[in-house]
Length: 211
Image (cartoon, rainbow, N blue to C red; front, side):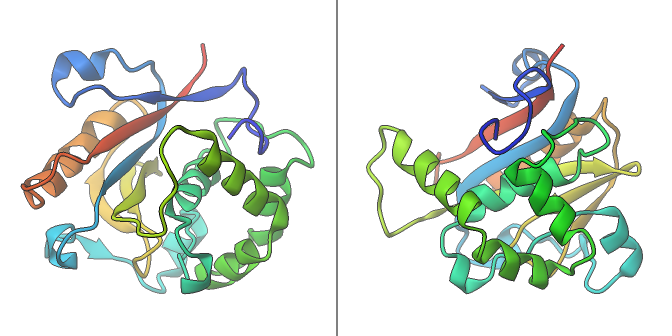
């Protein structure tokens, strides 16, 4: 994220070590976005209860929430898309480095719809290189078979949104704010975990403003 244009002195990601009150209180505030990595569920019903509302073609939502579809040609780019969803919805909170990868990407795609943004991302060599470098930098062996998926949670205009590039659009989860975003997202995350009971492959990260 820093290499793409988020200033190091403005924001950083933190691991969330648990979902109980004490563990959540360890996460530096204020939280700008929450990223969840979880196993691909056996069915979409496992993570999309009927009470959730998917906005598909709602112009007001597209104007407020920055969203990118994960088209097939992007491959296993859900982690990068999660990062873009996080950074793209906190532009009022952090100042991107001018003419950086993220700055140019968001300026170029501001007026596009989610599919057009995905096509643009697919052709963005700079972000593709950053994705490859990040993927190969860890100690985990790279594998073509990916069984986990990344999604992002943000609070926009007083509403909690789940942003999953595999869905048609942002999913609305009720009211939220910058102060309650982490706790509100965790409420949804716990529901997702309950619906995938036979796995422990969950990870939560919070994008927090640096003090």
